[in-house]
Structure formats: C-alpha cells, structure tokens
Amino acid sequence: MRTFQSALTYFLLSLGAGVLLFPLVWMLGVSLLPTELAERAATSPQGFLAAFSQPQVTNYPEALRQMGSRPWHGFRDALANTIVVTTLCVVGQILSCSLVGYGFARLRFRGRQPLFILMLATMMLPAQVTMIPLFILFRHLGWINTILPLVVPAFFGTPFFIFMFRQFFAQIPEDLLDAARIDGAGHLTIWARIMLPMCRPVIAITAVFTFIGTWNDFLHPLLYLHDEESHTLAVALNSFRDQYGTVRDVNLLMAAALVTMIPCILLFFAAQRQFVRGLNLGAVKG
Image (cartoon, rainbow, N blue to C red; front, side, top):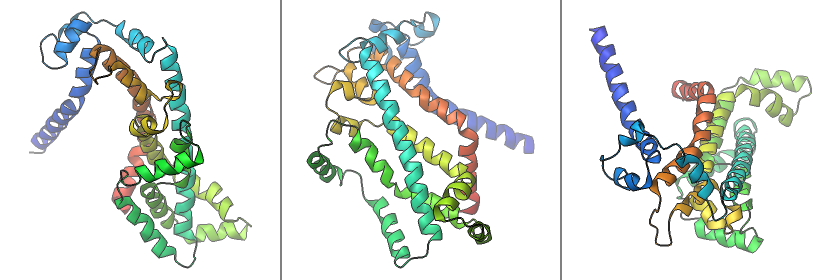
C-alpha cells in the first residue's frame, strides 16, 4: 500500500512538473526554429519537433544582436541597466526591511502596534492606485528618465518582507539580546552582528523574490525610462515588436527571452537551500 502511494505521489509530481515545464520547452523549441517555421510552431504543433532535429543555434547571438536599434549595444546597455537596478533594489530591500522589522519586533515605543497594523493595511492597496500620484511626484523631483524611481522606493521597504523579518526577530530569545547589551552593544550593533547572521533564510527569500520581481519588471521601467540607452532587459525585449504591436521574429523573441531568464534560474538554484529552509521555517512556526 505504501509503495502504491509513493508511486502515485511521484506520478502526480512528475505530471505537475511536466505541465509547469511545458511552456519553457515550447519556448526553447520555437527559439531554435527558422523564422518561417517559428510563426507556425508558436501557434500550432506543426513543425515544432523540427527544432530538435535540426536546431538553429545561431538564433541566440542573432537575437541579442538585434535587441535595440544599435547592434549588440542595445543588449549590453539593457543588461548593465538591469544589473544595476536589480542589485540596488535587492540591497535596499534587505537593509530597509530588516531594520524596520527589527524596530517593530524589539523596540518599545508608543503607537507601535497601530503603526504595524497600518503598515499591514497598505498590503491591501493595489499598486495601480498609487501609480499616477507617484509618477507626478517623481516628475516634480526631476527623476523621470533616471533609475531613481525604480531604486529609491526599495530603500523604504515592502510590507510583506517587513512582516517576515518582524516575525523572525520576535522569535529570538530576549536573553541573547540582554547578553549583548551587557557587553555594551547598541541596537545597530545587535541588528548587524546578531540578528542579520541569524536570519539568512529570510534574507534569501527577500533577495530571491526581489531579484525576480525587479529583473522581470516591465511596467515601471516603461513608465519612467524613456531613452533607449536606459532601458532594462524586459523593456528591450519589446524591440522585437513593430509599431502595431505585432511580433516580427518570434523565434528571436523567444531566444532573447530565454537568455534573460538564465540569471533568475541560476539565482534560485544557488539560494535553493536557504530559500526552502526559510519557507519550511515559516510553515512550522507561522
């Protein structure tokens, strides 16, 4: 009976993995096809298997060369901009969310609980509601067409990640902090030298989610970055569409999209142990 249950579990997991991976395999197949076959394979199974019998690997360098109006420079500029924006956002989120979470968990001040509830309430506010006021604010500050509207908000934290840090810090015994205070440590020292090293799973979750969200973000760079030299990779992929929104080379678009996904996949596998450990920690103690 146990063997049957294990076999059924593996079968269902394999089936679910196959369903989730099928779009990725489809993208890979279309990216390896010639242009004339790719348009048909993108909408029907006809010609799809030809990609794996005679793969056209040259589509990948050609896709990166055609990204943007200047050969190769469009991809290089977009890659550099995306790395800068994503790195700053990850650092900003970890620093700000851990600091605010520590404050809510360990500092005693008047109005702490109402402030915490108010912060949680902002999670119910859709991002579309604040889009226009934020754009007007950033325009008055002169930040349009710079990376500041994409980076600066990350240094003010995100309620969901603040909540995770706060819950983790609240579980750490107070005696440990008292011992540090006896040795003369202040709040910043306790946060930097005791709290942060202990919450690596939460940091991994924050870093992975922020990295993937920022790396793949299309809407905000499209709103705030107007010059082609300042575009990120998600916006630069739009160069494979014409003025009417029609994709002109679907095989090159799929190849470029797959290349932009590689850093996210590598980061997930690199942080997988801490990422899963953090999720299990929240499931057990949450």
